[in-house]
Every structure is written in structure tokens, then in C-alpha cells.
Length: 316
Image (cartoon, rainbow, N blue to C red; front, side, top):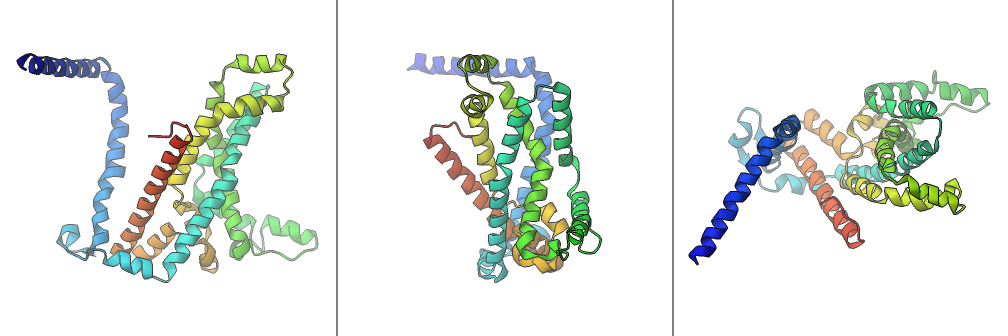
């Protein structure tokens, strides 16, 4: 018995020494990771402290801990609030539209770029497509509003030249969601393609050479080599997108929507922003944000379990 205990202690000591040795040996790598860890702690974990407001009658003067507990009162009010079902429906609808339309576009773009043989032209196209990612939604929203203006917008000028009446794009409920989807695809497609291009570089070039010898054309090579090589990357990105299904793009919607399209464009984030700052209902809006986070987390876990049952690795 004594021997067993001594062996266990010695193993633990060796493991501790091994970890300390690795920490000292790779100190520069840990130092590089440190800023990212600090940022995550400051902006991802510390704000979780504010979740308590969802269960309190929050008063600015008394602070979080000085305010009275109200339990699940705000959640009951939230689920019985007339506007909340509409807000959730809009959020899910816009997110699904972006997922169905916008998810395949970076994959197709990456496959097309991968087929380009002229390196300079390929780099130029790649640069042009991912530059919109760095443009603020405020600028893009302003450009969209100006271009689609019924009086001075270039799109309506062309429509009038063709003999038709101008269209009020930004106030038409049937069109507005598609404007959100289209502008989001244009902004993020090039940036998203970078991940898939990196995955394509990891595919063994000999596979393409063997397929060429067997008589496979470029389309066949894409279908049987490139797409299977992207399968794991596609699944991981899809899982992450499912986890953010209730994140329909706060900045984009806030900049581009207006009261005439609230019925189809008001999402959870904009609702929280308007009610939280406009009506000072901090507890109610915090409850809405917590609801969104919990649903997103549950969807991510379920999607990951489903992916594992299908034989894929998942993200955890």
C-alpha cells in the first residue's frame, strides 16, 4: 500500500515538473498568447457579471448588488410581451436567409479562385473580394441608402430610364430582408473564402495529378477531390454559424432599417438596444440577451452532437 502511494506521488511530481519545464521552454509562445487571453477575459467573461441584472430590479444609483431581486419576473414579462415573438421570428428568418444564401458563396468563391492559374490576377481578385470586410457597416449602410434612394439613387435612375416607376427599396417589407442578405454576402464572402482557400492548399497535389491521368476534367476534380477535402472545414464553420443563429447582424440592421420596416427587420439585438436605452428597462433587455445566448449555446451543442453521430469530429 505504501509502495502504491509513493509511486502515485512520484508520478504526480514528474508530471508537475514536466509541465513546468514545458512552460519555461515555450515561454515566448505563452507570452504571445497572453494578450489574447487577457482580451477574452476582459470582454467575454467579465461582462457575464452583468447577467445578474436579468434577475434584479436594477437601479443605477444602488448598483447591481444593491438592487432588489425579482427572480424570473422579467422572463415572464418577456415571453408575454406582444413584440417579442415578432422580434424572435424576424431574427431567425434573417439569420436563416443569410445562412442559406451566404454560406455557400465563400465556398464557391474559394473553389473558383483555386482554379485560377494566373497568380497576379488571382491575388487581385482575392484582394478585391475581401476588402469590403474592413469597411464599416455605417459606410456600407450609407452607400446602400444613397444608391437605393427613390429620388436620387442610381438604381432607381436606371429603373426610370427603362420606363418604370421608382421603387422604395428601403421601406418595402418584401425587399428589405433581401437587401440585408445581399449586402452581408457582398461584405463577407471574400473574407470567408480565405478559410476555405487555406484548406484547399492542404490537399495533396498528387490527387489532382492522378485524377488528370484518369481523364477527370476540372469539374470532376472539384467534385471528387476539392469538396471532400473541404468537408471537415465546412462542417466546423456550419456548426459555428448555427450557434449564432440568433445573431442576425446588429450593426447592419441598426444602420439600415427604419420604422416602416420594423415588422420584418426588428431583431432581438435592435429591440434590446431600443428598449434598453429608450425606456431604461435594463432588466427586461438583459433577460432578452440572456435568452438569446442560452438558445445559441443549446443549438451549438445539439449541432455538435449531431455532427459526431454522423462520424465527424465537431468542435468539442
